[in-house]
Image (cartoon, rainbow, N blue to C red; front, side):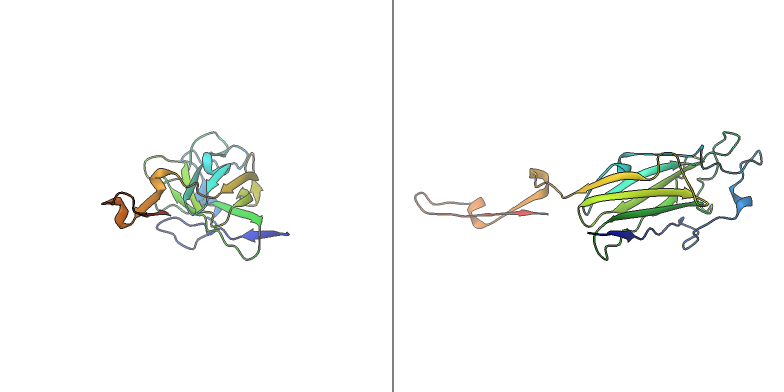
Amino acid sequence: PAMAELEAAVHAPHDAGRLHAPQDALESSSGSALDPLKCRCFGAGLEVATTRQLATFSIEAVASDGSARGGLPGDPVPFMVNIRGRGRGVTLRARVTAQEDEEGLYVVEYKAHTSGRYRIAVTLHGTQLPGSPFNMLASPQIPTAPRCVLRGTALASAIARREEAFEVGFR
């Protein structure tokens, strides 16, 4: 099938809907602007995800002078996250928020609703960050004991030589 673009909504908690920050808002305390080639992405959500489960990865914002920048709640989010995968009409929404305790760190959250291969592109003012685009594989949940629910009267009582039944459900 053809590649379908999966939307990524990028916003900060106090600046919903803002997709790009003005260049002067992206300067470090020393006056250096963010450098897309020095910023980095890391975390398991860049490589794997489980369908219908929250997946995350982080973006470290680094200025051209090497200092961390941004990442404080309320700051505009300068990064764009674009998630593409195979399929028709499937939309993934990625949420980028500033990490409260660490300046320069942004957290990206998303849920893959269908299994398959995806590409995650992270850009700063149209320039790809190192390693971007990333190849991610979303897999379905595996029915393991912690994800199962048992139902039925046979769980509480049973009569010898009589067929009894119970149901195992997957959540």
